[in-house]
Image 1 (tube, helix red, strand yellow):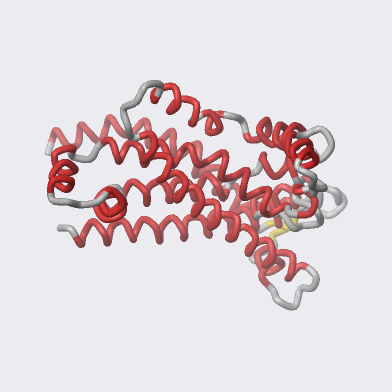
Image 2: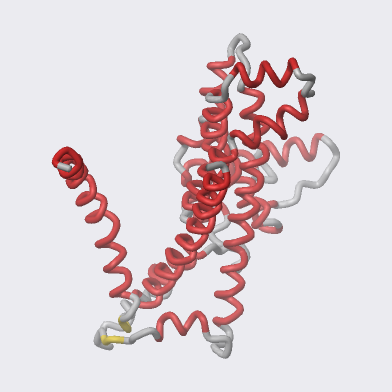
Length: 296
């Protein structure tokens, strides 16, 4: 018992630091969400507003804010779900490809992780100006060389653009986690499956994939948090446009505080975004727990 108490004492500084860095700002956000506070109207005093800031976004009869909020919520879920789907699928395929000992494989593994370490704002500017630009970008040059008129993807297909960029940036993280899972598999078990006549395709989807399913779920759980809070790519590529067609909830929070100057509504929207993210993470975590319990 004494040893266990001593161990907890070693954890106490880390717990305090994490609590100060995360929970205090969140508590301040909850406090701001209950205030009527508009920075563009300093003549109006800050007053307690209860849950009216939350109801402002949730009320159906609050036209035209009703279609804006629920449409942005739907766009956030679509972007998050499709990005997680593409990252999981292509990340698994590339992890299988990199799970081989061939010349130059270490260099290839290092290069594939490059997008994960690039700043979101920097990668957004590069993609918008040097790749997606219909006049000077690679996309426009290649399209005209093939005889096609290039379509401005950023303006006409903003959601597809955002999903593609999110997938490009976060897929290396999935590759890293899944590759770690593949390399941790028992080689003797894999050799036995080949001796028993298990084919290559069956070995992948009936042996390897079930064995690294926990790695995949953890990657999805962490990737969900990363993708939902992503902001820089949207700001530097589509800027939420055209209109609100590429808004996500974090970008909507940004617009509420820096465009509408409304601290209370921005706080309420940020709190709802956190609650939604925690609920989704909890669902994934419970699925991992149920799977682990099934094997006990």
